[in-house]
Image 1 (cartoon, helix red, strand yellow):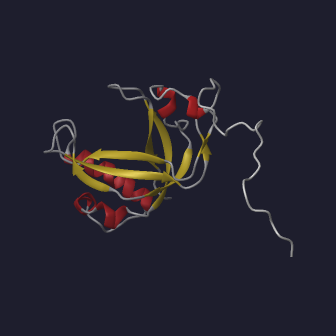
Image 2 (image 1 turned 90 degrees about the vertical axis):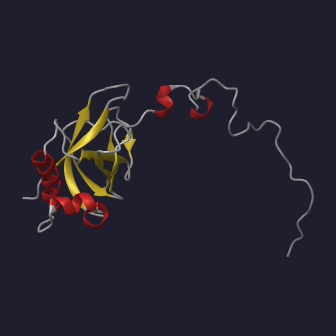
Image 3 (image 1 turned 120 degrees about the vertical axis):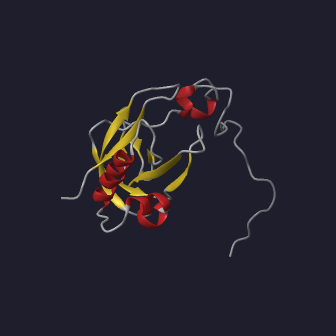
Length: 171
């Protein structure tokens, strides 16, 4: 067995630190925190058929009007895909489907039931009432996998372009 010398480790004075924060290059850690490109979310191309998994759906009051409820369904990509910019969008990336589930002048109970019904048909859910899905979405939707076509929602009210999903009913 050979003995190892103890003491200071040798360092190379010519070695650069891993991140030099003063460099102005394409290093993401050198980006200005106010740059909107830094926090830009991936955008999936329209009309792409992809598979999603629902995780932790919830019905809760809306921020604007606590008297109205919204069913929020986080749908996570099941496999990697490419965004509109060509970059990889990784498995697990969420797209949120949101349904206002309180009838209003703009959305009738019949329209709400049709929206929830289309989703349930894509999930293969039968024999459950729409109100049961609304009142306990986690029991009925959590962990379900479905196919959907992507759509692009244009920029609106200060929110950038984003994706939404159109569930594809099972054959």
